[in-house]
Length: 115
Image 1 (tube, rainbow, N blue to C red):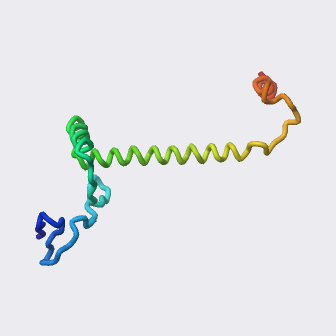
Image 2 (cartoon, one colour):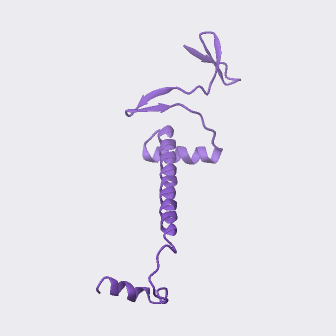
Image 3 (cartoon, rainbow, N blue to C red):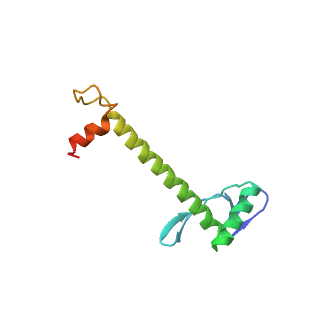
């Protein structure tokens, strides 16, 4: 059993003080979850709680969804920046022998693809 002293944020486990932000793994929806603690502003807390209630989910699930959405956007941005970097690396690598490509690129593409 554990008990918190409520003041220092430390728990007593087997007579020893341990930090309350001890992370541990638990099973949740077939995933191993890591327990962690976050601090929100009062307004963030109110908005998150309302959103979770509207969806009928726990606040923990709401936080997980927010984190997952944000991390997905980071991955998309990284993928996009990789694609842009790759495309830009081709700039200046090839020569068409034509001096009017910038002005007449649509016509040259139509010729090249037989349209």
